[in-house]
Image (cartoon, rainbow, N blue to C red; front, side, top):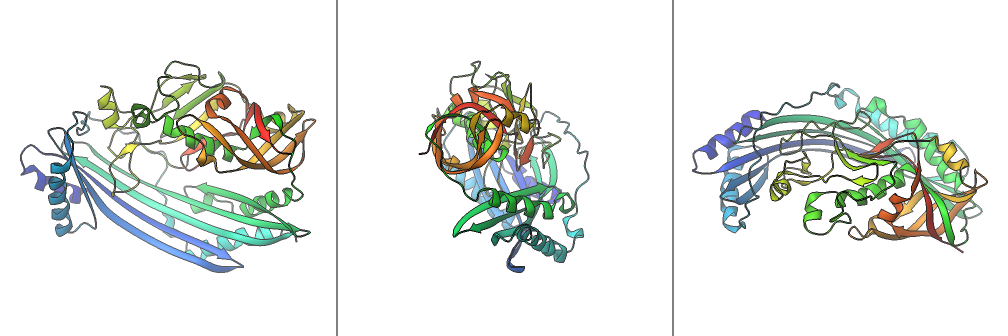
Length: 445
């Protein structure tokens, strides 16, 4: 990758007054899906390409290509230069500067995913399915018992001297089971993730999904009213996903953030801190730097309930004459950087075991699944969608609930976080514990 990047930059050096950034990305993936102990889907992928940004006099050109041949390199240079003619001038469009960065070092060795034979990975997907089906005869159907893995490498080099290489791996497995009794069907889903095949517990994932389906048998609505509500950690992560866009400087600068003009204000419970940190030890992937080669940092966005900061890439930071927080990320070589999270997670000054959270409620709802969290308004924070879960009575889990909706406003909701679980779980780049909201509107009978 280094030789390829230097080859591109060497060609550009012969063109006057141009600054350039080369981003090379290789991603290898494997996805296996099993149904009835037979392979339903099998897919392998290997994608390598180059993204080239060129800067000149406040304008930016961009081009990309698959492959790294000489013809491909000549093609992207020519097209990136041509695209400058169609670019709009903005003084903030500048190449990231080299500050002689010292990148944090990994304390984990790279994982060789290919050392595990594909046959063993197929068998793992079968184990997920069989372990769930064996839990109870009422588990009648499997939906997408799967194993997946990905391996990535990125290399960033620019004419100002930034040079950065990163590699990483991710593995995951998931399954959905259907439980059936007296003609009524309920579903249960579970996921596990890690950096390596060995970190995943395939049998436990299957059993958890099956038991989630079984516990929903006999689900019914509850009466409409205001209830204390516990959001399962996965549901809390879905809310964090909505919040994340409002914490990105590009959305704030466009006036499309629910936190617009709220720096320094109390926007959450004083017990809550929300941080973005590429090097959280509990996260699946470490990010020493972003896709521009800027080191990531621990950015406390909300600290003890107070909105303290937003996330920036180079472009949005230049707009406000400040430094990037190391949050300029690209999904692939086919796009330019934009503001995004590294590892976003909730912590709290005081936490409680999950059982204590349940025992603190006389009548309330434990939400285990939400349908349509993505429909929440990302600007106002208003939401209304269907949920499933368990009713809590006298401090104990009572009966399964479905056919109800919760509604409210995300900012008002996080202001009323009353308790936080003592277990932080990560899925992808987001981590959350279960959280207890003092009161939410529930529409049922």
